[in-house]
Amino acid sequence: MELDETLADAYAALGQVSKQYEWDWAKSERMYKRALELNPNSWLAHVWYAGLLSQIGRFDEAINLDMRARELDPVSVNSSTFLGRDLYRARRYDQAIRACQEGLELDPMTSLLFGFRRAPRSESSVARCHQETREGSEPFGWANLSGAARKRICIGRSAGQSARYPRAA
Image 1 (cartoon, rainbow, N blue to C red):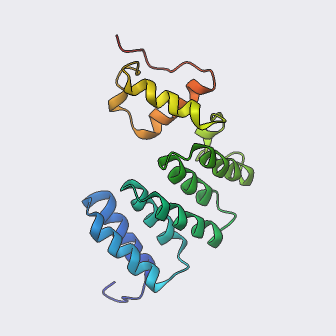
Image 2: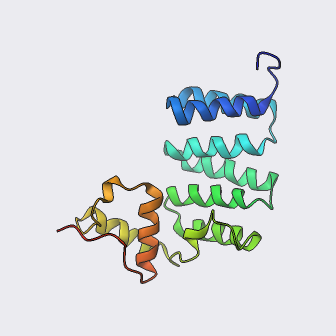
C-alpha cells in the first residue's frame, strides 16, 4: 500500500488480518469499506466483509453482501458456500440449505459443502439439535468443539446418524 493506495484487495487483506488476527472489528470494517469504495465490484471484499458482519451478528447486511458477491461471480462455489454459512448463522436453515445445494449443483465434488449433502430438510431438526445441547443432553465436550463440528453433529443426527461423541453422563 505504500506504493499504491488505490489497491482495493490490499485493503480487503488488511481487513482480514484485522478480523482474524487482531480481532479489531472496527478497523476491519473500515478496511473492508475502503476496499469497496475503491472497487465496488471486488468479490473478495464482499465475502470477507460479509464474514465479519455475520460474526458480529449483523446478518442482514452480511447476507446482502453475500448476494452481491454471488452476482459478481455467479459460478463460484465459494459464493454459495459463504452465503450458506451466513444464512446458517442467521438461523435461516432452509435458505442456507438451498444456497449450499446450489453450490453443489455447480460442483458436486466440492469438499466445501460436504456437510450439507446430508443436511436436514427443515429448520426444526437443526433447531431441535441445538435445543437438546442447551438442555444438557449434549455430546461430551460440546463446548470445546468448533461451530462447524457442532453443525456436522446436528446435521448428522437429523439425518438419522448417531453422533460420534459419547453422551455426557
